[in-house]
Image 1 (tube, helix red, strand yellow):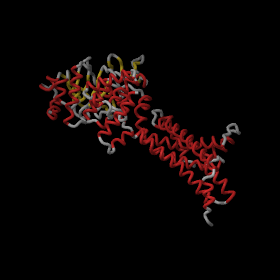
Image 2 (cartoon, rainbow over the protein chains, first blue to last red):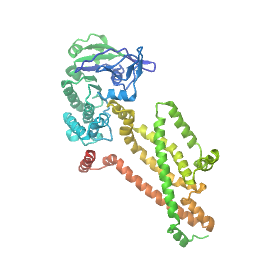
Image 3 (cartoon, each protein chain N blue to C red):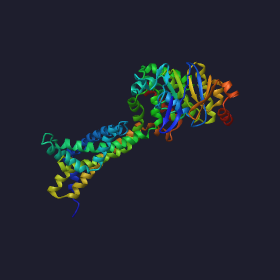
Image 4 (tube, rainbow over the protein chains, first blue to last red):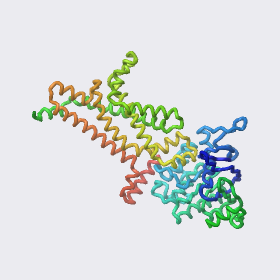
Length: 245
Length: 247
């Protein structure tokens, strides 16, 4: 898969498979293409060549006879995205809605779940991320860590097949990072398929099944975390780990 | 010359301005309704992916904002009839409402656009990532948050519109100022009559200002809560929010 911003090629041919239930951490220096790759997966960014499939279905494009790609309509793209959860660095909770309303919004208006059922689901999910008591609070009254946990619950409410995390702890105060990582660890143990862009080496080491090092728009190295951190094969990986560890 | 206080007093409480005040009021509301609708479509068009729509909106703004509203009023009343050989011959009231509404739409387009742009792009991305279509994202996430930004300048426009309706006296719409001119051209008591006319406008703008404050308090509830309210009050208000949500 290739991605270009104007004349700058950000992703120079990425080939990658993530198995169901697998947790993959994307590591690498800033500007290496990690976030772009993640955003391409649910078509928040268009791609210039290649294909992306989630659960066997192409995201954002349709294959025309002759092998050409055609961007899908808004409706079709939205339907695909509905089963791909995304958690953002800046949380992006809906500011005009309470925590519970944030979680229930998409189930009610996209999946057409009846309000009462959505509410029940929302409360269960908030309880799962440890925030049942904050259900009726607006985002700006929550700490960053709490907001991010609500954002995770909101994504889970759509029953995603895949969860994408875009530096979920980078905007948090250090003492709040733990609670979010704890929530993510719980998800990983529950068998969720996850792709996580992170700078949290501890999380990558403990929770990931596989670590992928991305630099300069290519995959430099990928390995199980034990191997990756103990014996990085590639010089660029070694120098990156030398700086962050 | 002297200010004829008894006459002023008599005119202020006479019924002469009741019907004109009502006309002024509903012409204002009707023109603003058209303006708001055009403003919403205009803003969406201006932000559209389709360049043809953006050009149409740009042309509309260029034409309407670049010509005097008085010219537009006379255009809709007289020139349109002439242009179409009287096939379209709008009554003065309708022509006035149409002219003011279309004029207002251009200004509201910019106000609504500013409101939509003020919403953090992350809100839209989050909505899209949850599978919400563009239209649903606009309706459920972007517009409700933009409304808070849009209300204060729209209140300004509303009050401006109320006063601009006085231009309709040129096409003989029986609004407040027209009624004033009818009276002072007969008795030449300009000062007394214009004082009464001004008081009627002041009364109406006061009503609009109060209505705006109420509306702001309602949609800006969240922000009001931030200012100084104690924790007990906060949780009580959130309790009320929960009750609303449960319906």
